[in-house]
Image (tube, rainbow, N blue to C red; front, side, top):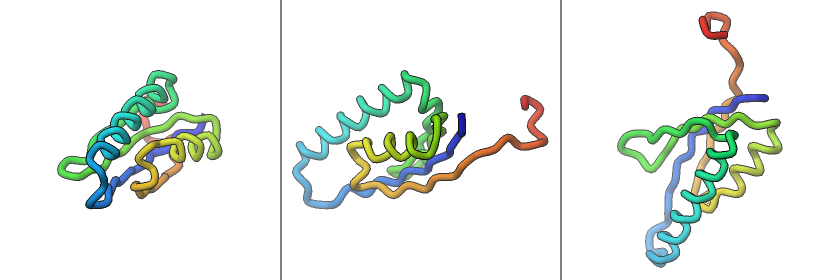
Length: 94
């Protein structure tokens, strides 16, 4: 299955109802952990000092990645940069 690195930068607009923000963040955590448990989101790292992460997705195809990203509750406040990954010829584990 194809691997993708995805950088997600979140910019929650100022002035939103704090309860709406808290509820959205809680739904985001539950959704992302469900995908992680299913094996399609094997890695997630926080970018230090930013409301951002870099994640690795192991999904069937572009459409599945698109479906996962669009399902993120924070997606409406997010910018994503997707990079398709390929095995490097110098990787000793390949």
